Length: 405
Image (tube, rainbow, N blue to C red):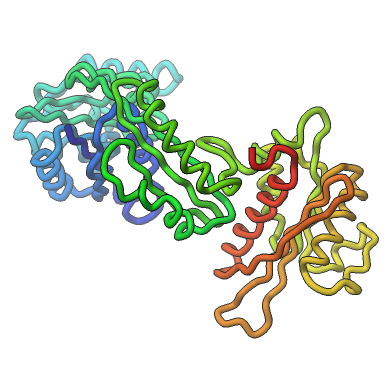
């Protein structure tokens, strides 16, 4: 059985809003084993939305729309669904009464324009929306199912989880489930990761394996489909074990784990904290730790040049090379902050490189024992900062007890 998402809204095409709804729907469909093969974004134009829905109904068993069911003139999804299925819109007085009651419960009066939301295609199953004003609906048409949900992400996901997924399970007898395991990799580029697990990636069948590159990080996705969660996880387990063996300690975690959370776990409690120095990264690593695990951050010194690090009492001008400076800064900041772990990243442009290359030195000092590495990083300045911060956090992760476990 095939599914398709149609996201309606000119603001999506103009880039004013990022379409997170389609990603959310994709994850939930995957969990119940429903194949999502198409995602289409279309603007607020009745003719184009209608044509898009007709195309979707010609190739997909389930078509789910988001957006376009509000109270304004450009909310035309109801009309488009009616047109694509050759039906009339029918006014539901009881639905209008409930919409008015929703507003009254909040001390305001429903606008006359909200009446639009009480018009539903003939024969549709109304899906009341207790968390918003826009009622959704489900329409069966010539063996296909059209599901129309609001565009507000909170409302959309609530109705998806509480009404739509149970309906689809019962309607189509869906019993299978797709489980995902995402391994997080740092220190190997996507091409090198791909080379080491190429046989898994080209092999058709179940599970499937793929990669997704981020700035400074590569995700390895293992997806398995089975009758239930336990069976799917049994399919994933041997593949995951083999991939971990091939990639070694470049794999720092899985699923929701981040470098920040892994560092926090390895610092231990109570009182395990790290102090950072950043030169040239605008505090990117400090910001990431402070946002994710603030209890693990003792201090963060951010400087554009060595002159901003006078508090550490080190004459960095007398030290040659970014790696040597980063190593000295890591040891000094640990002493200054009174913690066991200090770390530093130091960026310097590589003279004469075209396109520009940055020397990114990262170093960690654990209980007075420093170590570090120098990397060459390219790209625009914002990308360099993100990559360098990731390299620093990974250096901390590798230096702490538990690395490679």
